[in-house]
Image (cartoon, rainbow, N blue to C red; front, side):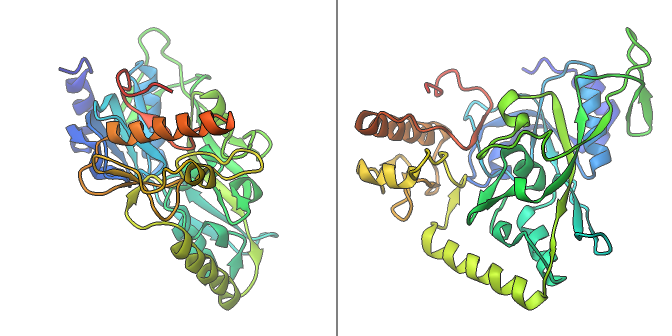
Length: 333
């Protein structure tokens, strides 16, 4: 039984709140146990309000975007899961360079394709990425030799370590009984402030108490034909080199000077299957749910790949994905 103040949450959020929800419906690998409570944010204002309200009351929560790049435990997630469905996209073709502003729940690949249709280039590398803009900022997503840090002009964040003012939920304004004038400020962070590294950022590395609300990305002038041709080239390459099916995307970060997929293949693990979880026979860095896999099956493969690669090379593969939920049994690395 959950210890969350469900009645209070329902009074604040109404039909936006669901209880005992299977997170397998919201992840690209179709894996994950139950969430105690799920809230759906349909705008960056919703997301700001929900995050501020929950933080204000010390109610634990995580934000789930497109559901790629995460492995949710079979034991599920205690606390609140906020589904980020804030998807507004706005182009500024009069600025120099042109830019696109997108809420953090917008699909990054879709933003890239919308830009190309307008004759705006610079995001073609992202056209096949299934994750959200917010997830891309959080993990400095990349492909085809580029990454989000090359495009980011500004990220709008809700900074949960600083408080002044009041917090609103729906049509109701809540104030802390202890400190009635507290509010969490929205800040605009530059690319440098985000502290990007390979598949990492200040948000991911330091686990800052901050929520990414939106991002403004720099683009370049091109033509629809040229930009869409580049997307087609990348899409063709992706289909030839990456497996179809339900996966989390790349499982491990590439070690310096090498490729995780190559190392996993070298130790003979491509195609290895535990239950319904399989290391893809197409690409060793993709782990596929072949139908009824569990998160424990996937993590057992993760552990196996790490041990085999370490035994052969002395290199400890580092996860690129994030682990959500309770991992007291499964999590060993």
